[in-house]
Amino acid sequence: KAAPLPVRLLQSIELNNQAAAALARADYVMAERLYLKALGHDRAIENGEGIAIDLIGLALTYQKAGRPDEALRVVDLVGSDKTPDVSPRRLTEAALLRGSVLLGK
Image 1 (cartoon, rainbow, N blue to C red):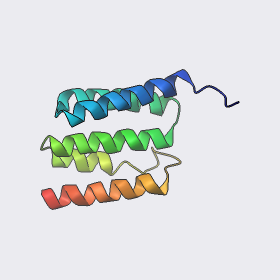
Image 2: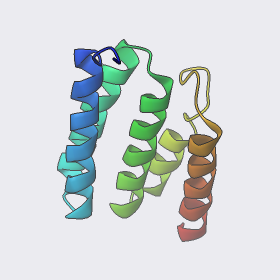
Image 3: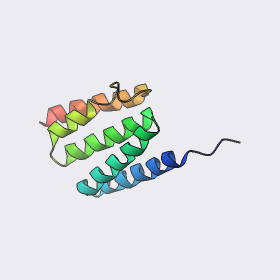
């Protein structure tokens, strides 16, 4: 039987899901707030993959809200020393998002 997930990880997952829903309905203020909260939880437990997911979501929020400079600043954090243990999939997502933001500038 698998061990239960830590409470902070579960909270981060829930916040991330709520942020994605807010982003889908174009509520960028709420999405930003929720992604930042999730990021705080993931940083507290040093969950590199979760940090990357939060940063990508936050960058996408900034892109959709017409804030490309902030989107680039945030997406460039994915894979930095502040986000340990990030999967190649997340690094690829970040690179694609970065390109998309640059094309849209």
